[in-house]
Amino acid sequence: MNDERIIFRDRKNTDSCKWDDMTPNFGEEGLHAMWVADMDFQVPSCVQKALKDYIDHGVFGYYKVPESYFNAFINWQKKYHSFEVKKEWIRFSPGVVPAINWWIQILTEPGDSVAVLTPVYYPFLNAVKANGRRLAPCDLINSGGLYSIDFDGFEKMIAETKAKLLIFSSPHNPVGRVWSLEELRRLMDICRKHGVYVLSDEIHQDITFGGAKQIPTALAGDYDSFLVTLTAATKTFNLASCQNSFVIIPDGTLRKKFDEFTEAIQISDGNSFGYIAVRAAYEEGRPWFEKAKEIIADNEACVRKAFSEALPLVEISPLEGTYLLWMNFSAYLKPEEMKDFMQKTCGLAFDYGHWFGGDRFASFVRMNLAASPGSVKKAVDAITSNLPTR
Image 1 (cartoon, rainbow, N blue to C red):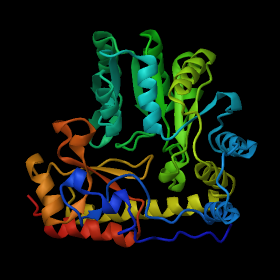
Image 2 (tube, rainbow, N blue to C red; image 1 turned 180 degrees about the vertical axis):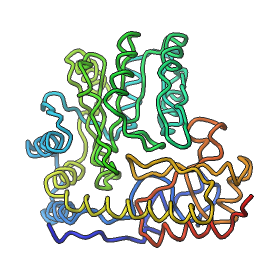
Image 3 (cartoon, rainbow, N blue to C red; image 1 turned 90 degrees about the horizontal axis):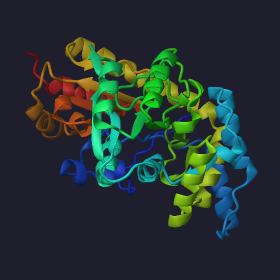
């Protein structure tokens, strides 16, 4: 697979949520899609071959999950994250977001408070509200685009709201932070002190840049009794539609709670296509992934260069992790101008900042860099050619 290359695909008119289903979020179709976090890259050839072989066999009856699937994930975690996951810790979910919703129901009661560090991936916020829990947000500290955790504010909020659960993003979506060991320990120690369970969403664990080192929250200390890790091959290999994610539960009591819940709803495993795709990706997809990262890094450099020359007051957060760029246009646009400018003037679809925690983030957008260089340039050119400097 050393000759693996990245193939860009035109995904319009392919029933792509990103390109063909914009109306629910933007009120119109036909925008240039730089929003939802999936890639415009064709998946690794090893994944295509594994799925083709299965399709060619032509029998899609009940599927037994092979040991090779678990071994592929366990080996990946050990090799690239120094995280020695035991098979008995692993459970299935059809996505990280469903798992978050399940755990909210397992670990909290209606009316309980659930903590988040805002701005944050908006399905966290939606999950809390949809399950009848109270949202307990604590804003990250923004220092010129570099974000950090307000530990004092977080502990005060936890004590005041009596939060039962923290949904944590690591690396952080959308601000791009890869948390240090010291930050992880300090946060987790506060949660242990106040009896707060933690869901650590590490779906972007592989996508780091600039020497940033992703540390699994589970390796920060002895936190197994109140910590669950959620991850997937989804972002690493562009496999969202395969609906296959990992729930890592080292603690036996928490595993029992999870097993009882999934037995009651009769969802304990997924479809064969997801298992086959994920196994192949973890076994043979690394060369493809490394090339995908190079393209993302080049795209980031393109955006920074263009804005530094034409719109130097656009605040772009450092991209330590994820392939999502968090940008603040407050020096050039008022919050109420954002939608019309981005959509009507530029013809672009971004994830809007207020989706990630409210109007205080309304001058921000999140830009997806997992696209062709031409697609990224088109978006940047639309902004720089239409935005008047002030």
